[in-house]
Length: 309
Image (cartoon, rainbow, N blue to C red):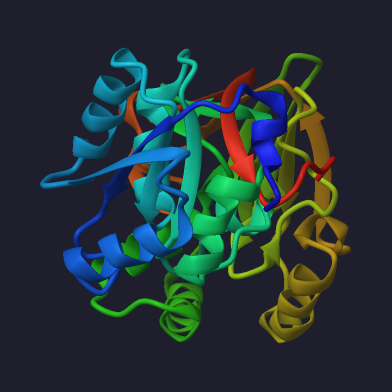
């Protein structure tokens, strides 16, 4: 049996806490417990399950697990659930695992983790230990990306809808296009400042939004650098070509966008900013300005295999 990340650890029983979003579609408590028992060797793993009851509960459960020295804390849900659990693990020795049950699953895709529960559980036993950077926007942690402009509007519309999945996401994108007007932003990194009119300003820690829509191809979550994509307004007729480009090589590679590597980015607008998106979830902007920075090597995660991303 492959030992994966155990090649970096002594063979002792590891405690695993599964923090489950109750709306994550695990098939119910008994079914999920059965899947865990079928994939994880009980000689190597001692497992527990906790279900979140309110926003922020995942962070509380993860932080408590880290204080107790739990070896692996697995987030079972979408990007928002993973984000919550990761917040509770920062600065600890506990390792984050992901069992993706959301729509976009940006971090899971970046780590090579399948949406099939059995395959995701196998990563806990056979995967590779990686250390990744995290981003911070106005104090809010992000693992994949954060941004303002069009993607923040889509996040608000998607969060307010009752349906999930790529089809629902596409409908909200088309709906947002009818109402959206680009803003003029003042941007400042640690090296320079400038003003520009942009369709969106998205800062990537990983390479994609989710659904395999890429932001900056080649962006890595372990290089101590954030990758900002500043996309200029483009004709509506160019939307199919831009969407296809995002699938193939990323928005930053299109003629309408620029790529700015940075460690810090301050985003202000002529009108105070009201909303940003954090890993696909809408978050109000306190103070009207967004300040983004990187926290290098802040989180240990389990990936499908050791990779340079």
